[in-house]
Length: 298
Image 1 (cartoon, rainbow, N blue to C red):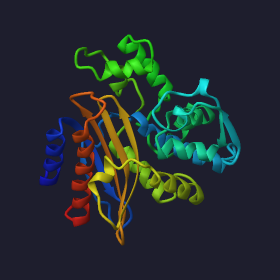
Image 2: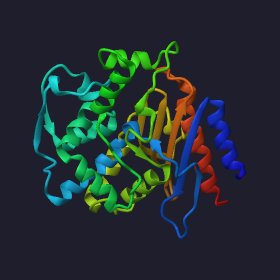
Image 3: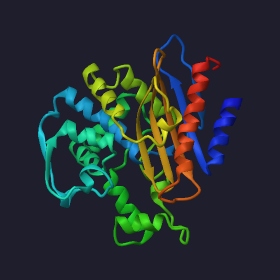
């Protein structure tokens, strides 16, 4: 383990989390990377919406999905969540591409499950296989995760399940934390997927451009972006959160330099709804990794 990897491990330890990371420079004449458990299986949580975004783009390319077609989503059929369509009270009609925008920009659970139903797990798996991401497996959407949480916490509904999940009085066995059960990937495969988007290999150049624009629209500043709080840096990303799990994968681009793809996955010792130190550790670890890659020492 080199000095930078030790610093990243220490940043995770100081925040009270286990952490996994992979970062790689995109473009340039040689491949440079840094990792901490980069090939270990990790639970995606809402990071699964990134592979789903790519699958959507490829279906648009194939002509099987019209991105401008309207879809109506009614309250009774919406997956629970704290953002976007999940919190609205009335039926909403919008285009498929706008549903996808909500899925990424605010991590809208309802939007994601509607898109997943439209694309289908089989097509999503085919997309990952085509891109060589054989260890990335999406096994269901957030509605399925919520059903599992309700069962594992022996509660009546999703709200009660998340309340029980954050309690330190009881420690239920949570299948959604197990890479062998839920949607799973590796940090290296997620930076590989980002590299395919940024090089126009994941889909057509037009659809890859759409994917990059949507990822740049994500609103959350408390994880990856927190490590780069200055002008001249663009950060695109997708977060993932589930109880003690806090993740983010994305691309950091300093003006005039090659972008860097970063994937950070964490599992905290506690499952409190708010763990700002765990969130900040994602940005700190990413900053350490990106700084090392920019230095050219690897």
